[in-house]
Picture 1 (cartoon, rainbow, N blue to C red):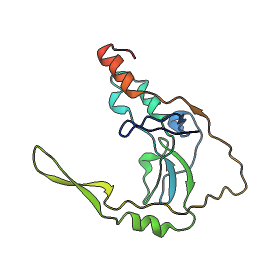
Picture 2 (picture 1 turned 90 degrees about the vertical axis):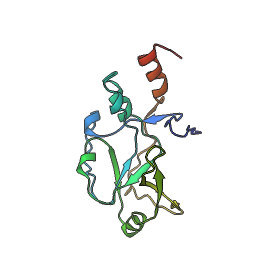
Picture 3 (picture 1 turned 120 degrees about the vertical axis):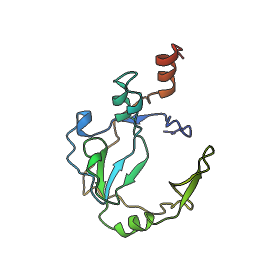
Picture 4 (picture 1 turned 90 degrees about the horizontal axis):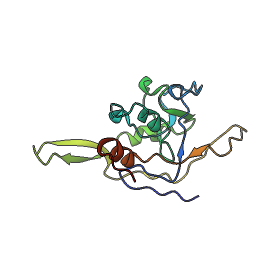
Amino acid sequence: MEIQQEIGTGTTEYSINGEFSANGYDNTLKFERGTVGLARLDYTYYSSIDPSITEEGYNSGYAQFFIMAQDETAFDGYYTAFGKVIEGIEIVDEITKLETEVETDEETGETSETTKPVNPPVISNITVETFGVEYGEPETHETFDINSFIMEKLYGISY
């Protein structure tokens, strides 16, 4: 299956349902140091237009993941936790020390550090241990088009 992504929009060929309690799943994994989670989009900003948009964000994961460098209970129940680093946590610690890019506000001239590394790390080798469990392919669905949603809800323009 080919995956296509438009930079900045999160548009892909498919999405995966978020498996966490706020989305009706019984996932008891906690977001503590070393937990591996599925990234997703957050459409909460648009919930005043249509409250159902929150669920679209819940089900917008597809290929990006993150590894917790420290405990963060605010993610519990709202993001899919699906694994745990069992070896090599010191590499996660090194990633947190990487130099990040600086952004300048064009209006004020103020600078601020971003989360984008100057020299992004690349995974050259990773092993996933399932302890003998066969998980199969995830259930997928067509990706939600946030741009069409906004155009229709705000401007009455349908694609």
